[in-house]
Image 1 (tube, rainbow, N blue to C red):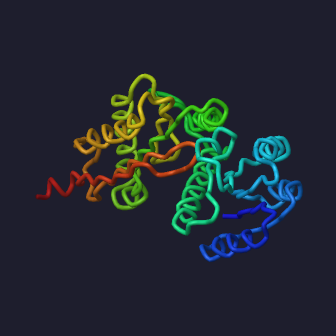
Image 2: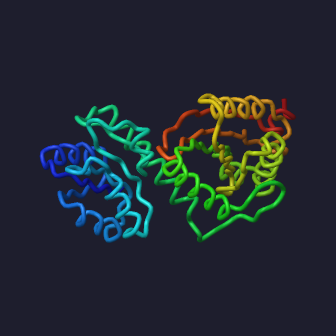
Image 3: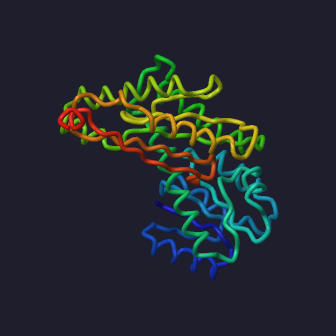
Length: 279
């Protein structure tokens, strides 16, 4: 990722930058907020780690970023006192406490990469998938996805996205043919439409991936329970593969909005019908 650090404490900024560079990221530093905001568009920054000091409230710099910047960077508040909930309510994606805990930094960078990848991939307008059969298009899902990110900050709402896909789609296509690969994707979509609740918004986000936007859960465990429910149901599928020889993998991942934290992950393998027929 391209990361920008905005902090008047150059000693801290240098230390943070060195750790980020060691993790393979390209890092820019500045002590001047206005200069940093100009760099976001100019250098196509993916993530911004900033300390609003001497201002106690980060909203001023965040409003400036929203007005001046045309991209949608991942924003991390650097703070000694502010909680994650307070930072998100102010409009950030996450908070990183000072002084830096190496494990917390690794987790923060991982979450940032995941969220930046999702925003880039889902927001890519160069390709789309049509709406139909209970599944909305990628472009429509992107609008709701961006709106959910915004509503978390504005209204303190909670949202998660449950991604369910076939990661070895290309292997199936290569070994068993395009029909077999597309058949598996089609059957997956049919089962997801059947399994989802009426309130869940289902969209196609890739050739082999679908996503459910889970908004305003009533309890802390509701989204994880939903992920487990889908996992259990998908583990029972037997009609999703055609008569090929390549086993099918189904990945289920629950991602928190707006932090990008991975809250649940499961992979299930379904044996190919061709193998079963061959004994």
